[in-house]
Structure formats: C-alpha cells, structure tokens
Image 1: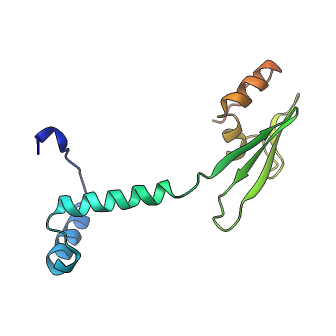
Image 2: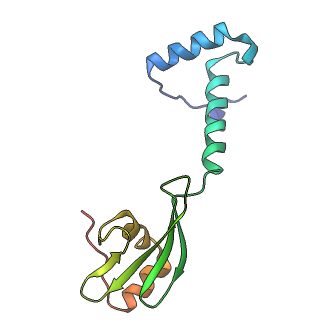
Image 3: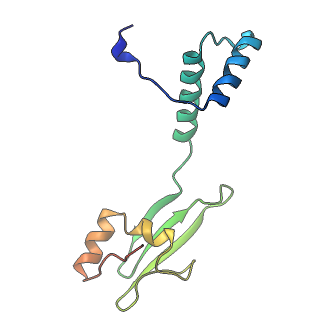
Length: 127
C-alpha cells in the first residue's frame, strides 16, 4: 500500500488507551491494530449517518408559504409552514418566530430564495 493512501488522525489519548486495551483484551473482535479499529468505527458511523434522514425536508412552495417536514423528534415527523408576509418577512407558524431553524432552512432552499427575491423579500439577518 502506498503512503498516499494513508493520513494521520488525532485522537484524545484517553480514547486511544481504551481502544488499545480493548484490542489487547478482546482478540475475538478481530482488530489487529488501531488503524483496523478506526477504519471500522468510521465506516460504521458513516453507514449510520447515511441511513438517518435529514432533519428537514422541503415538501412544497406555495404563493404565500413553504411547507417543510421537521424530524427533530425521531419518533414523529412534524409538518411546518413558513409564511411570507410583506411587512413581517418569513414567519414560522410553529415557533411563532421569524428567526427559528425552520425559517433558516427555508432560506437555504434555492428555489424558495429565487421566488422570494422576485417578490422583493430580503433574507433575514439571523445574527
């Protein structure tokens, strides 16, 4: 294997010591090195992340609002409407706010941004 295929990875010493101990004590797991363990752990975490749907999903954009799904609670999908009002700007009916995560998400959607900009809306200041 060429050197270009490998990179260095920094890990807290305490975690590293735990992994070394586990590799030594649990030979039945099949890890022969820290690299074996780290590669397996990273692959498993990537698989886990890939199988988890994103928190937000854009459902539709209407004349006066966008509808999204919020999966903040893994046991339930919540439908959320973010309205666009001339004097108020974007407004989330769930949070009763114009600066919540739902409004931020809607303002990250390029097709929604284009539609809102055409109507004269300006992106809110989330600072």
